[in-house]
Image (tube, rainbow, N blue to C red; front, top):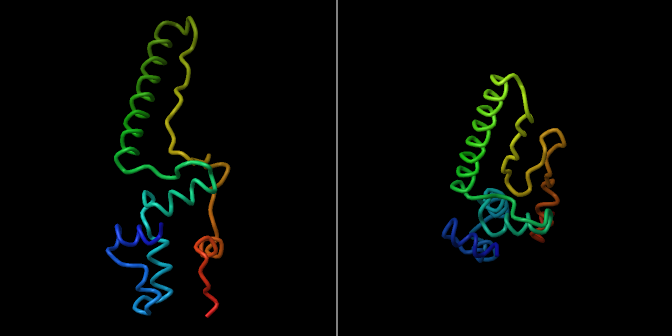
Length: 127
């Protein structure tokens, strides 16, 4: 999976590391900088959260637009409800679309330490 990501994202073979033309530092940096939609970050998310971690930019933008429309509709309904003297049932706060793996900011993020990330890839960095 990492080999496929390196080929598709960077046009580099993972064999470069084993042949000595890529340093361990470069391997780790390139791995940690893979885009969230790459195979390895997606698989890491599936293993730790049980679902896809990141959406593509297009999907995230569509969710933002949908959330904006839902929020504007809600405020419009509140305005109409208040102008009517608050009679009837108060409009419900909309349920917003969140990216899979989204964590409430008050609860803190789900993160991995550098050691856990390196361990996930089975790298030996002691030398």
